[in-house]
Image 1: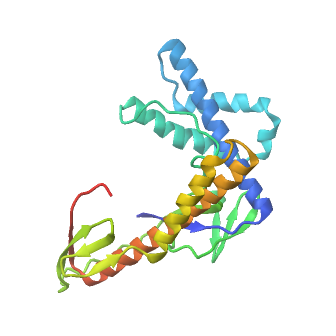
Image 2 (image 1 turned 180 degrees about the vertical axis):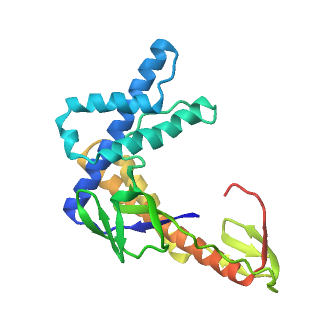
Image 3 (image 1 turned 45 degrees about the vertical axis):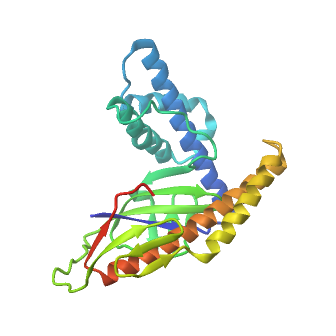
Amino acid sequence: MKRTHKIALNPNNKQRKWFAQQVGYARWSYNQALADFKKHYDATGEYLSVGKLDKRFNVYKKEHAWTADMDQVVCSQSIYKHLGAAITNWIEKRARFPVFKKKGRKDSFSSKNGSAEVRGKWLRLPKIGWVRMFEKLRFEGKISSWTISRTAHRWLVSITVETENTIAVDKTSTHPVIGIDVGINTLATCSDGSKYDNPRPLKRHEKKLAKFMRVLSRRVKGSKNWHKQKDKVARLHYRIACIREDAHHKATTDIVNRCSGIGIETLKV
């Protein structure tokens, strides 16, 4: 069984710079390969396979000396894994034609198993060595893949582990079965009368976010002050997301621990 744990990182300035470089390299690789695919398809009406795109890109990147200092697995994963999936989804009519990646949107890069190692709260990565994590890896087993991503000011790693651990199900449980109504003012209301309120700091942060957004709207787009304010907005968005996620985890953990069955409406919330 494969399980993934997402952990916040605490990199130094040199490591942050390297992360940003790899994100840029992954984005550049993806966009160059997508442009090649689109140009060939528009001219011939035929699809280039991901393998051919990767080979053609390997020839193209030799014209750019700076790519020699980058992690080459990153570009392969960007083309094979991410662009390959996007093209397949388009061909099978599950999604629209792939679009070019933009800087600052879903910044991330991926690599394979053999290049990473975890020891306690430390993660070893190629080129830069050991990076500090805020917590230990939750699962034991062989690392199959990992992805570094950036959300606002925070760098995070998602580590996928192949583990044999399974979750035992107690079929003799005497805990009650309950129904849950998910709301807006209240996070969740259970059929046994228990309620889970939205976290108190959330309202305060949402008011602050509205103020930050008003300030951002008055800034000249692209200016230095606009970028500063945009960073503040991104940080606050991340803080709000963390508060919500923490509240959801605490509520669901409590419900699961005291119930043997759960019924819930299928709603888009």
